Image (cartoon, rainbow, N blue to C red):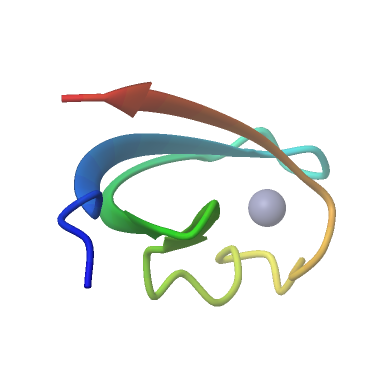
Length: 54
Ligand SMILES: [Zn+2]
């Protein structure tokens, strides 16, 4: 077991419509889990993602 899971702030910007989402996620083994599924414009794959550790 390790205690390296950390919370991160994730900023997701849609490359199609420019909408910006600010989410809180958990970092586990290099993967970010935010629960984000898709943008309001139905884009679900073309994003610019920025992560900041708390
Ligand atoms: Zn969009």
